[in-house]
Length: 284
Length: 308
Image (cartoon, rainbow over all chains, first blue to last red; front, side):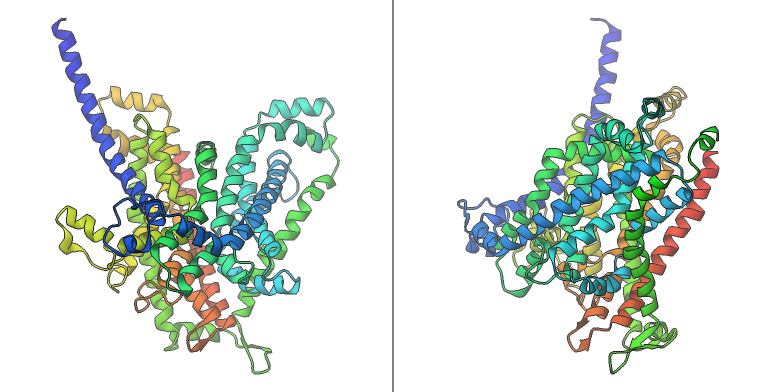
């Protein structure tokens, strides 16, 4: 229309250019992150001959489910072990974390200042420096090499992080709400149940996913504290590849099977997880 | 204060709430840690009895010809592993976070993809990269050839000179999402008025970032640094998965975690040694404790002074 509009559009153009320049590294990085996942996916569907040739990039000649069936047969008991270990571990440690976080956030008691450093200490402790006596202890209480033993360990070593997350979250619950509940005559339990639990969903999502994935992916505890019947899937997968000559396609199929639960959780709840994680880290 | 006087002198119901946690904490954190430290001052005798040897195990670890080269090698490799994460992982994470926080459309999609590998098992990531870097199947070789850099291809995971760097970079690839999210959260938490003021003063994007944003996210930088430190000196599974307990080739990828595993369980001809294992574990504990204390007393205190 006029000269001003043309100069405006050229500066807008520059801004667009800048925007695209910023996008390039992000897009390249994203591709760099999708390639390995692509390789895992297509290799799992390939036949043995296709893998051993230099055709990694190509799509499989057909959909071969045999690899998945073979990998599933091998991993089935261990996938089950992982599931029945991870679900109770995640739920129990989240509930304990919520109760602890609530008490720490809302009530001062003698020694309460000491609790947070102790929890941080528990979070940062190298598991190697407790695992030898822990293995002996598990043996003594008859839980060595068993799934319940592993559940117990994951619950316990999850408590510091779940407590800290809930503590940070509960600190943001408005004081007025708590005061109002007190005036209404609610006790400790009543306040927890009626005020805190109903607003806890975001924190529970973060903590449950965190515990689910870290227990599912754990290797050190699993490899030291379980026997080959009670191996969770990570250790079984590692041994499947290590103990025999196994084709890359079956290995990749097995990897995808072992990744599936955490992938699904992440795909469906990941948004809430990242949002909650960011909200939490802002306070930390 | 007033509240305290109207309340009961000691809230026993809170004890009931916290007692299980306290008992569990003692039983599973304090006791095993102390017992593990205790064990590092003993050796196992012929009749399976524990014999007190003072600091002999530590002397062995530092001077014995069987142990010292492995221990010092693992320590050196672990420091390199940590340095690579600090430099490569955390600066890439900062760059990505800055890009994501610049208001790009679809940033949540990039964020989700880049964070994705962190939710997968290290075993799986190890397998995938082993397959990609495999010299026989030549995936990465064919990529490099496609951009006519085929001559650069080497079996990076198999060569002593490059194995540690390669493994470190794979770990960087997997975990870059965590510092990225922490930086991103810190960056979007900066009040808009501050940035607006800088813009009005004519500061460039680059200046705004280093003069205003970066100092404001220093607490996140500290958290990332300490998390990286603790994670790296605890690391075990990636090396074990990709290179086995012997952390080959020729111990080139051996770090404290794999050294601990080998010492405790034994390898090939050498029998496992729980007390030497406990000694390695004690060293790991000391290293991590030192890092965490430095973080708390030097870094956090300085940050608080700056903020005040």
